[in-house]
Length: 156
Image 1 (cartoon, helix red, strand yellow):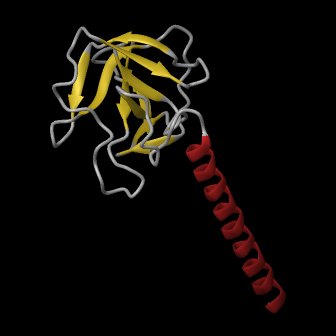
Image 2: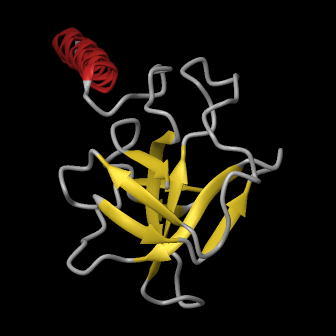
């Protein structure tokens, strides 16, 4: 019985240590990548850190949302999203630093404004050949967070 308990403790500690090391490695990667991160205030002018992408759904087939990270690394301070007046429907945005998966210029079909009036997301056409990697959920809905903090959404 004591041997089983000791084994379980060793396994639990191993899982915690591996999880911590993965977390530290992911944080380091996001901070040192060429695309910026939630801690990077050196974003090129007019560019904002990429949060997520996901399909719009049956209401607008063939379209997706490109979302911008709202908070700085402390999770409290706003300031990464552009003000609501920064662009409008019909204008364009450029996505960068996604290893060409989403890189390109997109025409804005719709804009989502967050609770303080900043631009949170742009609804655009899905580029041909893009495969969503739904690796997270938000409110139970699937989200592709592959380029979180690495990609950039730039106003043109």
